Image (cartoon, rainbow, N blue to C red; front, top):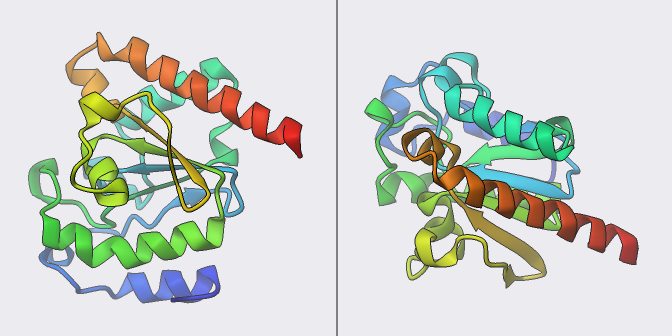
Length: 188
C-alpha cells in the first residue's frame, strides 16, 4: 500500500504482473481530481487511451463527456480510472487474472481519492468491485453501499455506442449520481 500518488504511480509504470504489459504503449493509470467526491471506474483502456495514456478519450469517452457536460458535471472534478491499467488485445474483456493483477493498484487509488460515490461503468467494473454475483442488467441504476462508499452501477459508455436505447438509462443513472452528491453536500 502506497500512501502517496507519486509512489503508487511509480509502482505501476514498470508493472509486469500480467501479460497485458507485453503489448501496451502506455499505462493508463487514471486522470482527474485526486480528491474527487465522485470516482468513475471502467473496464480497461482502448486503443486511443493506450496511445494517449489517459482513460476515456476515445469514442466512448467522448460520449460520456457529452452526458456529463449536459448534466453540468465537470469531468475535471471527477477521478476516472479503469479496472486494468493496460489495454487488453482487441479491446476484449480483461481476464480474471489480469483484473486481479491490477486490483491492488485500484484499491490504493480509492484509498487515496476517498470518494463518496463510485460510478461503476459496466459489468467488469461491477463484478470486480462489488462481487461476481452482481450482474449489470439487474444492478444498473440501483445504489449499493459498501464500507461507507456509495456505488452506482451503470452501462459502460461503449455499450451505448452499440445500443442507443441504453443512453436513457445511462442518463438517468448519472442524474441520480448528481442528485445524491447534492444531497450529501447539503448534509455537510
